[in-house]
Length: 209
Image (cartoon, rainbow, N blue to C red; front, side):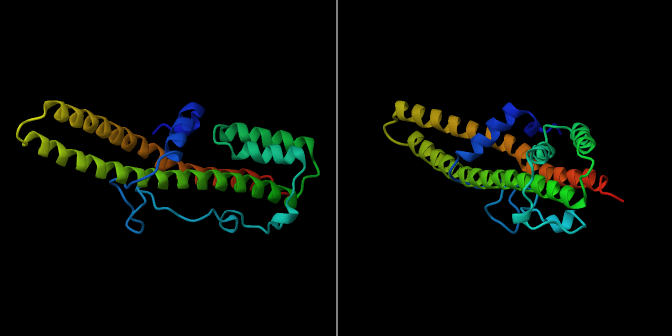
């Protein structure tokens, strides 16, 4: 599956759509959360201890110099390929030969913090999207009931029938367009988790022996 979130324009459009929604539940809802529309389970924050097998500096002691902070930001960006990210890392280490295990751990922690922030933003957007879909589904059901009532009323009001049908068509189109987009966006938290593991592995390879 193509990763639409690697396309900045498409990513912005999808996330903006989810961020502005307010209502509903999609069809594929995780069993443990009736408001979660993705097949993939919703999990908590990414754990540095699970990904990084070495001690990490405390958050308040992990402040990075500008160059290291820029590197961490680049490592966190999925639009930068793993190969390009690794090349940036190699360049940084070549220019900073004294970089030790603690500094590398701090770079990982900064990158993970960025990745987890982006992941949480996507998760929250998906939740808002799901609530919006449920509201829209209820409106579609009400529209079908109203259309059936209008079509059996005496005398027939053709203008009302036409208006209800037009609105119903529009609502159904929006609902199904959103459902198609959902499959892509549901993959995004998983792809961000994968990126966190990739960053950890490339940094672990650079630890002093």
